Amino acid sequence: MPADCVIGVDVGGTKLLAGVVDAELTVHHRAQRHSRGADETAVLDTLVGAVTELREAHEGTIRAVGFGLPSLIDQERGTAVSTVHLPLRGVPFRDVMAERLGLPVFLDNDANCALLAEARGGAAAGASHALMLTLGTGIGGAILVDGRIVRGADGAAGEIGHMVVDVDGPPCPCGNVGCLEALVSGSALGLEGARVARASADSALARVAASGREITGMLVTELAHDGDRAARDVVALMGTRLGVGLTSLTNAFNPSVIVIGGGVIAAGDLLLEPARAVVRERALAPSSTTVEVRSARFGAESGMLGAAVMALDGVA
Image 1 (cartoon, one colour):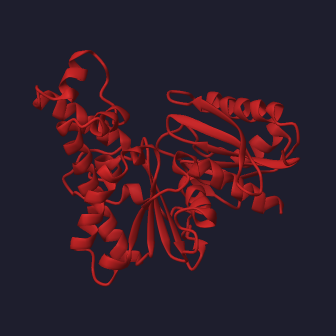
Image 2 (cartoon, rainbow, N blue to C red):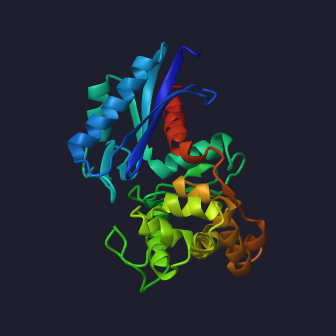
């Protein structure tokens, strides 16, 4: 086991994943926690607990910790400025965590971290122009141009999930309506699955709902893989909606690769093939045929690995 490693932590809207990672992006230990419903103090305590668990499990030296947060990040101050899914607003995160952990701390938006990992050794390896969408509780986004993560004038670039795709669409947690996140995220998948369950009495979705189980995005995906037609139709609808968003992004950024990650990617090609079909049909040439829409190579671990890459680069 390598003596010197870092810890990468991917903090999602409902759960976090942390890992001890070496320079080859091999993960030696993992820790998971749930974060839904917690206040600021509880979230910070949970993060410290996960990192402490990993430090105790690892026999070698931990050089630094990288955090990927679902938040707008002030890189200069190391502050989590605002976030839709966690109670971290205006928190001097880097300094607070460095003091509590006694280690160098690096942080960035979670989707930026995910794209960093995929560009370093994953689905976007070798690409100079790439986009990433992480489909989970919400939708994170990241942009790579000329090999560099684009953060924008205020550090807020890449909020792809809050691109409006339906002016009269459903409400989004950000306060707007018709955002891509409100139509395609894991939460949206669960809501659409519940609606279809009520309307399709002979479906497996309906039978599961009648048993009292909550219809979640994960459950819809599971039933779709099991062959339930109603669930497959729900996933395909999500894919079509995703394709509409990807078409606009393709036209705006002309990426060579768009990487789709996050928990919803468990749907695989049931989700991505409808999205690819929309891009081929509706994006402008030549991008419509040259852009590749790929699943994240590192799957649900992209964000954690990218946070580790950030920490490795920071102490190199």
